[in-house]
Amino acid sequence: MKLPARVRVSRPPLPLAPALAQAASRLCPQAPADLTAAALAIAGGSVIGAHLRWEGGEAQSTEPAWRGRGIEEALAELLDRPGT
Image (cartoon, rainbow, N blue to C red; front, side, top):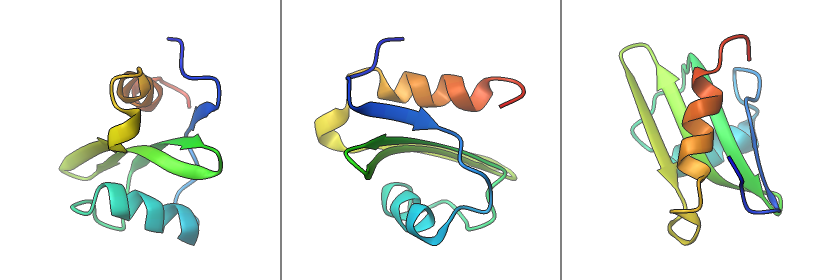
């Protein structure tokens, strides 16, 4: 999937570093701190999208200005990819 040039998606190690945890919490406030998986979209040093999973649930959110550019799909695909 083709993403905007300055957007990168990644699966950071858990638990998330404090700055990433804060950004993910801002995007998905319903997510608990004890995540089982996370995929983040970053542009210009800022987290612009998050797909988070925890025991019994998951949430995804993308900054409104970045919606509809394939970021949501890229986050879900990365989170579902085995071995990452």
